[in-house]
Image (tube, rainbow, N blue to C red):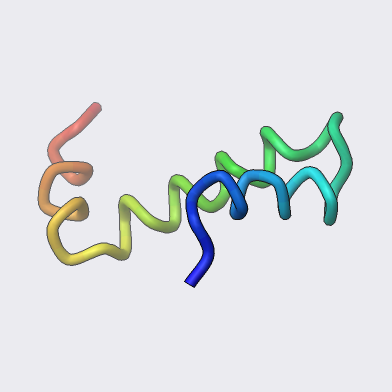
Length: 46
């Protein structure tokens, strides 16, 4: 399994410096909605 730093580096490698932030935001949204623990917290946020 990759470390978080390796994951972030892979975003830059795959999508470039200009687009890595957008791709991370897509991942972040998916993770917070899909993870069993975090989804309980995320659903209550405005």
